[in-house]
Length: 165
Image 1: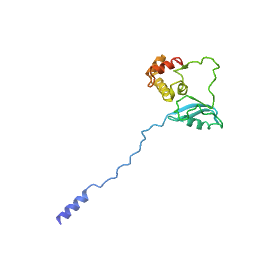
Image 2: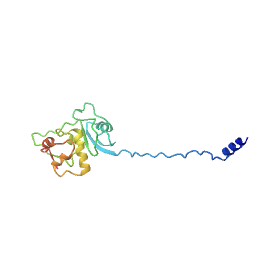
Image 3: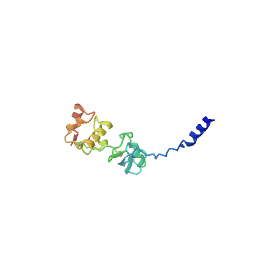
Image 4: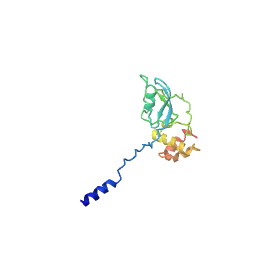
């Protein structure tokens, strides 16, 4: 009987369990930054479109109303990631130079799409050039392209006559 009284007394004086307070959920991810690109050419509504970071050319074309029937997309890489401020030409043939010497491309103002059109560059290297320029500032000389991953002496020799700072 004594054990029952001691056990009952211990239970009676023990603190009651309290429910845990509700925790507020806090999002640690920031919204993706927005990019603005200019879609021109054979689309339903040419002009500026706003996309999220990481969007592709196809996303911008869709936001511009889609491609007009019969437009030639042969020279357009719909899978390429976009960069802020670039222009996307849809179904427009490359400009004819009529035998004139083409002007050199400015490394400090060229878009990733323009750099991608250079021989041996491609979309990945073009984006690396833009990223390098964004991180370290404008190129002071064409030779600084060596600092960009994927550009060695032979590729630099090819590009030297096609670009300037």
